[in-house]
Length: 195
Ligand SMILES: [Fe+2]
Image 1 (cartoon, rainbow, N blue to C red):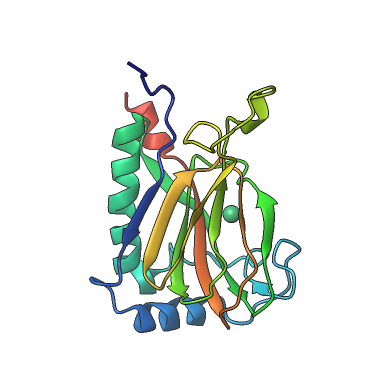
Image 2: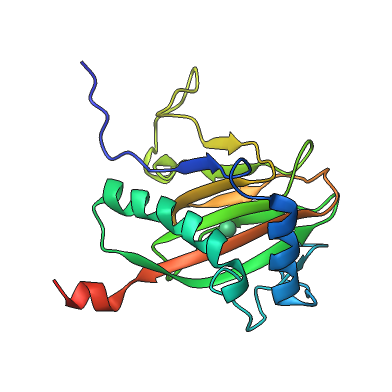
């Protein structure tokens, strides 16, 4: 018998059934105003460097509560203290754009919520966190243990939650205006101090 040890929790859930995504995108974009260049999104634009948090804005309170419901499931599954949003931003990618490999430092769980994505959208690629430790393992047939990455196809309304330490990137994008709301989290200090 082979036992699975130290799994990585990834949550992906489609919120397009319960949220009017066109309306959500409109509301999110009106919070941030003009977007600027960010080095992680070549050719695209981002609100990462602006001082306007998106998900904690009162005008998208309903969206935040749906996302928090799912973050709660991650907290329970991982057995960690309650989380709050720390920062959030929007990236808009034109055709031909991509996002290089990165992690989200100073965060516990991170998320991507696809406000506008579809056929041809750059895929969300999660890199195998054990790969750097595998040294001499050579995959003959790439298995769950030896594969180097996992690609997740994205669409409007998809929410992906993942541990912030997980290295990930976005493949070349063929969908005009691929728009993503991303966020980080930190522990809720009050709840930690209550224990
Ligand atoms: Fe990211």
